[in-house]
Length: 294
View 1 (cartoon, helix red, strand yellow):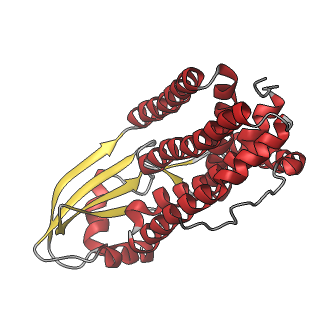
View 2 (cartoon, rainbow, N blue to C red):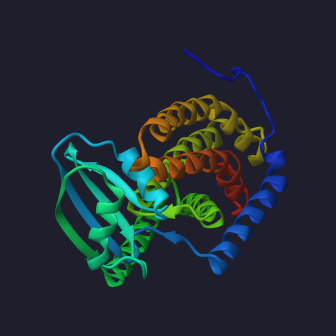
């Protein structure tokens, strides 16, 4: 069986728990401060703006449209194909320079060739606010469901440990988006929910090995059992993270703007999730006082 690490590796991960907790605390603090001062750069899905559907007589290159928009001072539009290469959906944030009466002039000035406006809609801030609220509820329900599931499968303290790791992953992932002011839209929300599931899967694999080893390994301390369990699952964790990252890098490079922020959020989340499943989740069990079975 293919393995990236030696089978009998015995690295002392828990010996690095203090530096790991300090690093995580710094990232969490910076993320929270960024939320408080800068907030998230909400995309049109969560704010107000215009949604425009255009139909052309011939195939159109959305890169040319995007470049033309940028030359005319519009840098944060979202443009993607709609069904065929002859139709596109354009999303533009609400701005004092853009009204329904002036968008036609802007489109005629920026786009070469004949086109027909199939749809021109204004998405109000109230709709964006409702989407934000539903997204927050989705994450809360996901975390509570995970707590119940792990509580039944393992025990309640394992569930608390998993939730601590997941909250850590979500806050830091969103913190990066806040610090760099990357656009946060529905695709990023989907990525955050996917990160929760991905990180949880990694954590459950480690927890399952910990539970098994607490029953079979009797002579070692609980910290030794945590280290043994992490080392035993390390190859699987690294391989899973690498293979998923390769797919996401391909999406980021070749997928275009429509999946750009989704891929970025997933890559950040996978990196943080892998780190937390090794250092944070297991350390949380130690801090919560879980003991090996006698």
